[in-house]
Structures are given as structure tokens and as C-alpha cells.
Length: 398
Image 1 (cartoon, rainbow, N blue to C red):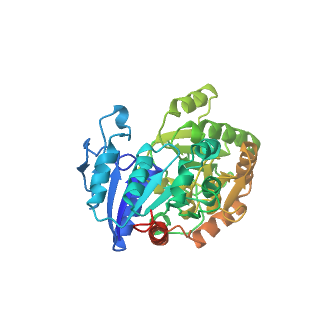
Image 2: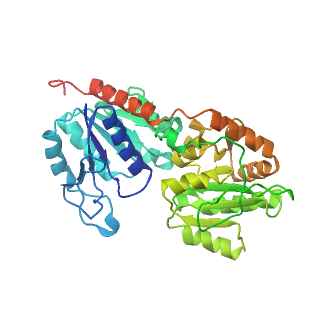
Image 3: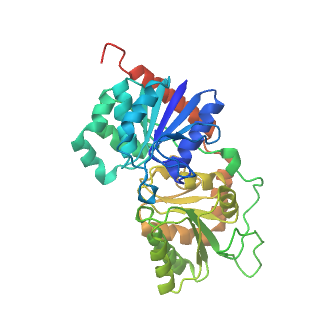
């Protein structure tokens, strides 16, 4: 099968859709499929206007134009995209979309106009924008014309089902990870190390004077939607509940809220939170190995790929109800799912005091790898392509 993978954002930009699209392409190729990527993101050396840059052997069509901050927007792309898709011999198109994805939406109009079977995966929580999408009506029309709709989690799929109506099905196509890459080599009990903002910590045994601080970690874009400032506030509340010196927090990532978070730390004299910035995957695994708990404070998390990676590494995950994290974390089994920030603070304080419970949650994660391994997810993607082909109007019936 020859697949056109269409996405506003792609490498070298780093983010959830970018990395997932890249990894999906690689695993489809490993199954014997042919994949080409079409994106509005410039190449690693600023390639624009349709230049093709191979990434891991996969052709990437850079349908980008020069814009400030290399924004992945190109209203001129549809004509050239139509020409390339027409001559490309593709069997199916797979569109990756979020709440604001102009290139993905233009691509969908192009693929439908060509009669190319189209699958569309939503990587977002529609939330408050759902009424706007309902009023615009284009999502429902696309589904009625045969676009195979999917979302990355059941909670993300629910509002999408309301948008497309009962006549169209919405599948769940989860994000994937390389489970073997994130699983630790040893499943022994966790040990602890003092907080360190300069690099990954190295485990050392706790001394006999008392329990070591509970090491919390999270990886996120420091942006309002991810709630990094709220996380610091609720962990400060947990520290007051558990006792001074009982918690340490490492926030991995960069973004526009970094200054705001740092200002809060400075204003309140908090020295037990570190902000190392964005780190590569190998270091991220080391950070997880040196931590006790992963914390996910966002209630608009459509999936939570970083939380899944941490859960695969053995960390119990503490997250909010109504987020996609609930797809792979069960309350009291391998993590804690709580309704609000106050409950999250209480849950973290409780884990600081109950290390036996912490170890039980960790042991379950280590003994039970998640099902969102790439071979399984890639097979689900191929099933979506087959569904899109079945739904696509036959010639003469349009």
C-alpha cells in the first residue's frame, strides 16, 4: 500500500504530532508499505516550496513558504499538493490534525476532490471549540463523504462522534511507542538521589536517617494548556502536607511559560524544583530511571505520550480525570487518577508517606507492558486505511 502522510508539522520541529507522524511512517515502511510525507514545515536547512528532503529514507515534501518563526502555514500549497498526489500513485491518504491545522484541512479538501481514500486522525481534545466546529459543519461533511475518522483516545473520540453524527464511525487510533526502548533493564526497587538541575541523576541508596524525598518528574511544553505553573503550585501544597523536604520536582521541557514558572519559584523561595529544559530521549529515559512518580497536571491531554513513556519505564503516573492518560493508567493499579488539583496534591503527599503503595504501583507497571507498542499501533493504522478505502465513493458514484 502506498500512503500519503499529510501533516502541518513534521521534523525537525519537535512535538507530539511531529514525532508520532515520523515514527508511524517508519513502522509502516517496516511492514512493507511505501510512505511519503507532505508537510508545511520547512526542512532542517530551511528547505521550502516543495523541495523533497528524505528523513530516515522516507521522502518528505516540504510544501512550505518563508514565514516568521517558520510557521507551518501555506495557503498556496493545495495546487501543488493536488499535482503531486495525482501523479504519485497513492492508495490512501492519512491526515494528522489538531484544533488548528490549516494545512491538514486543505489537504483533506484536496484528497476528497481527487477521490483519494482518506483517513483522518485527531490529536486534540476539542473541548470548548466543539460548538464552533459543529456550526461550521465541515467535519461532518467530510465524514459523510467517506473520510475514516479516528482520534488518539476514547476521550478525544467522544466529542468527535458528536460532531460527525450517528451515520459515521469514529475509531481510536492511539499514539505508539517503542516499548522495548523505554522498559528498564532492571526491575529492582527504586532508589533515590538528591535533586540536580544540571543533568540526569544517578541512583544512590537512601540512608538510614529517614525516607528520601519523593522524586517527581514531568515532561511537557511549558505552555498554559499544559499548566506548568499550576503544577508547581499543587506540588508546593503537597510538600506542605507531607512535610518540608519531602518532595522534589523536575520539569523537563521548554516553552513560553518558563519565565512565569521561574518567577513563581523565585518569589516563593522554592529551591526543590528544577527546570533542565528539553532533553533528548536517551537522557529522558535516564531522568525517568532516577524518579519515583510521573505527574500529568493537564486536563486537556488528548493522549499523553510522555506519561505513557514514563509508565512503560515503571513510573506510577498521577493524572487528571477526563484526559487521555486514563487509556493506560488505572486508578490504584498502576497510578492515580484524580479529579482536581487539590486531590492531586493529596495523592502526591500520600505517596510520599506510603512507599509500599508506591512500589506496588511501580511493580505492576514493570510486570505489564502497555499495549500501545508500535507494531500493534501500525497494524491499527493499516486497518484504518482499509476502512478508508472501503468508505471511499466508487468512481461514478460521487
